[in-house]
Amino acid sequence: MAVPKRKMSRSNTRARRSQWKTTAVALVSCPQCRSPKRPHIVCHECGTYNRRQVIEPSS
Image (tube, rainbow, N blue to C red; front, side, top):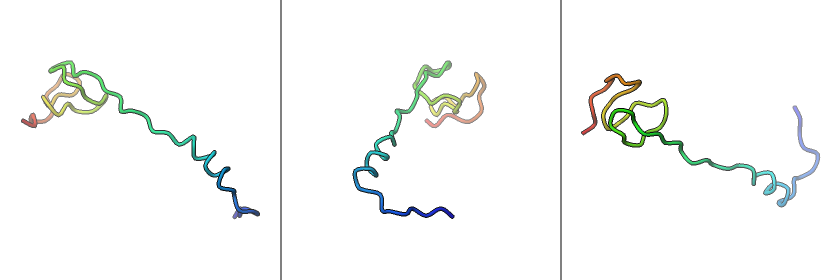
């Protein structure tokens, strides 16, 4: 198993970790009710997926 020979400096560690970024959640409008939803996920407002009713609406 590989083991580091020297302790990694704080600046090198932080420089490496600076590439860890989060991205904003992608939202699309539901074709049925036009509310924003995540792509490829059932709409929580109307309960449709791929223009079919798959669950009961939440409200």
